[in-house]
Length: 195
Image (cartoon, rainbow, N blue to C red; front, side, top):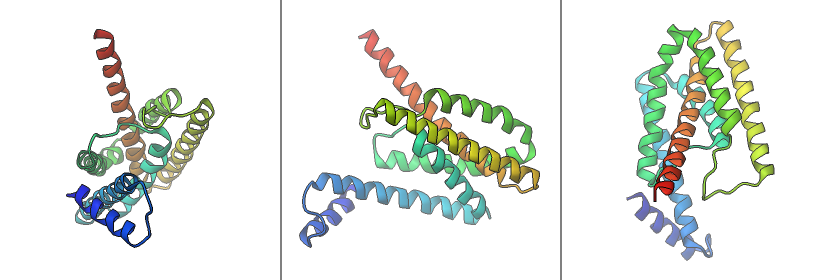
């Protein structure tokens, strides 16, 4: 359904001069936009129903700041991406309460996330090759974003504001996707060695 809608919109744009060539690029871009829109709309609806709009916005920002530089798991279809990203967002809203009742667990979690970011950022993807300079730059940006979010999280905690838990959940969600990608890469390499 999303693919068909993307094809129709691309045909419309090409017919009226907005898109000139490479229809498959436009179709892919429109599919991504529609999937992101639907996923964010679903998260917003859940956040409204659970009275956690602020927590969802803060989670989304912290997740985005780490995920864009760290990289991570990529699904094969837009539908599976929509399901996975929405599930991670909902799980993060649920786990926020855990961090509120057990804030001391944020420290070892941050240390584990720092280890993941320092050693593996950015996660390599065959469709997006990076030069050594780009890798170094992405890792530095990811580490900077991590430290800014960590300091902000500590400040919010010291001010007795519960939003530190959303930051923690956003960082963890990004790192979970990174670990999923690393596992997939490891299993792929292992399968190739066996063959």
